Image (tube, rainbow, N blue to C red; front, side, top):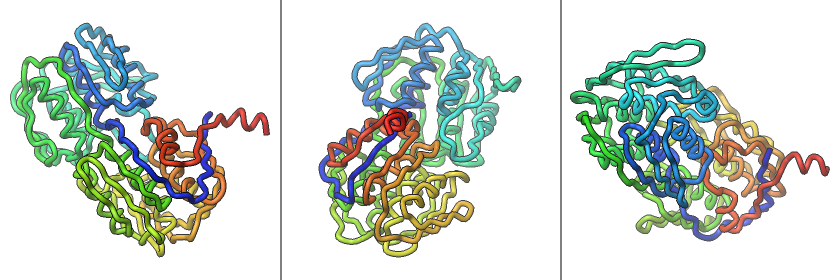
Length: 427
């Protein structure tokens, strides 16, 4: 087991950091390559465990995949299977995104219940309900879900909740369905827009992504394509907060500020000055502790649930009491207990955390919960803490952040990866 050791000692970070391509945009696009036999080139993919798992799924289905730097060359012309191996489904929830495109191509699919972060129930019922409305049938037996439907047909679908994954799966399934599909109450995230752009470059006919109404005209034939994924807005937000929590000056490159409007608003409300210039954002040093905030997470364009843990870390040092309410996932505050080990004063009541700001945090041995953003929050806290912090069980952090430690080192952080078992053996 690996850990991250931080001896920052409250020193400010300073410098530039380039944001990687978006994992959450890349995963559904990778799944979309199985929709039509062809050759695909995807650029600016982050080098992450989740991307590697998605590649393994493609290869298990029969695709030929070649990596060149941060680009993948994917040949899906000779796919031989519509069944995703159980061991891969258990490693990553995003594997479920293959349901729509496999049904669209083969008229069948077989999966098991997906794994991923432990942040509360995220049932696949919405995915199944949406694909059923396109004409698919499903049967569950012995922990596996089998779907079939020889000819998907477009229709009007109203989502009970603007689920990102459900919206993506329906878009992928409907791209080759007969007739027209309308998705109402669709998710509006930038990653949905990127998927629309990718599918349209294949020859699909989709409009409306980025709004709550998406219209899809099914096409019989699509084609291989080349596509560059958008920058990762959550990684960008995390590095802005790394600058904020250390009272440093960090310039974040390769970012689309429009995708971060709600985050930028809260950073400024906390008392920090941000400079925006083209595709970069710079957070400037602050001479005082952050202002307390009232934050509620909502679907995009509301405040993102994926930034809630990082803001909790920042608000532990605020000048006053903050209230943070999680409206998306019911079990996404496990990091609060670990932050309390570092001297934070946090009281969690259901989905709400009341955070009484303290003057400083103290280094401690903390364990990253099985949720990648929670682990990032502990790293941020360690950067602002007095003394040494050790964050262990960092597998989930590595699922969501490409070279987090290396990028922080370039900003001047005293941070390194270490082997937990070896240190315990030598202790």
